[in-house]
Length: 133
Image 1 (cartoon, rainbow, N blue to C red):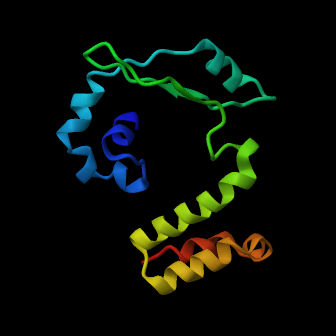
Image 2: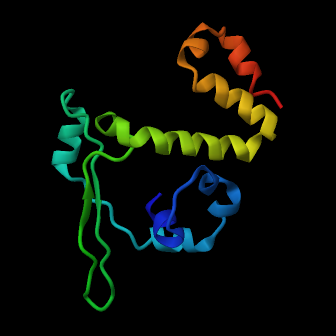
């Protein structure tokens, strides 16, 4: 995941597809990476009052220079950032619907998914049927 972000400046569902996975730069960069556990991150992840999903990254270069260490304790999808994250989640959902379904089907799935009362009243098999191509 980190190599994809460093190479392409993004991480999307499409980046998990074979076409991207076959890019030799990914494995070459991964071979140069070191992952170190930060004990506090693991502890805070298991703490039911925090459930932090913290990560940090710092890049060190051959010439001895480095980037600043960037840490994110609660990423955009975390429950503590829900109001901030919902618009991003909806945009991601729309993008991924568009990758697989024709416009009319995308609209039907989206309309139901964004109407909580209607979604909760919909039998599961009817919801799943919307995803059949």
